[in-house]
Length: 127
Length: 179
Image (tube, rainbow over all chains, first blue to last red; front, side, top):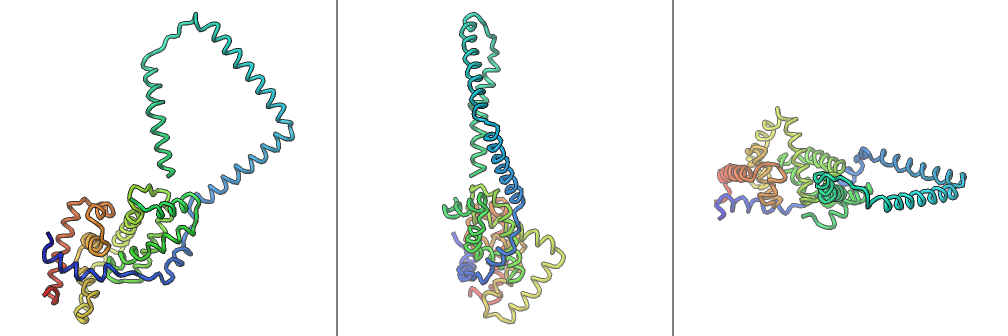
């Protein structure tokens, strides 16, 4: 319930509450005095450096016939994976692997709790 | 919660460093922020504008820290409150003396000017009481929002409001208001 003081002050403050202050160049003054945000120039330089490295990388790749090199690497990797799977399939039924249940709990906790938490934290920090 | 347009503007400023978007935010909130300072400084326009400018510059520099958990205006008013208190601390020696003496005198010579009388009554209040009173009676914030802006517990805000209102009402009655 409002007492007498509340009523008196509300009446007097009514006009003050509706007062709108004209801009009169205030916004322009603020905008003119805004400093460069720290980190902004660093970020710009960082982006330019990334772009520069990317262009140089593409140029080297193209000049050194990088595609055939890449193709050779992929073929080698594919053969390595196939061999590994083959060896695993041949040895797995006869190999007994000791697994510590606490390690399993830790890994499960990391995957099910820590990773989603970190992802959520980083996303909410960005947004 | 903060309005969609505010979130969009803040994102533009924080992510793309879009000064045009910040220009719109300043235009939108300059009136409440300057009015807040005008009431805290008891009508000192020059000082109010300087403090308001400092508030917007700080908001711009720290806009990346705005998480959208409260409205943008609450976040901005919190910065304004901190800027005001930094200024109060810096001027601690002379502030109260300047305020109360000069303004009470001017109120007596122009008793038809309600605005001056309100400022004179507010000069009687402690800075915390004045802030709570203006945030509630002029800016229309509820007690929980005042608590968020000032960082003062809700019960203390209520005490400040009660004491502040009593002091102001007594002063105003002595000067012929409220019949």
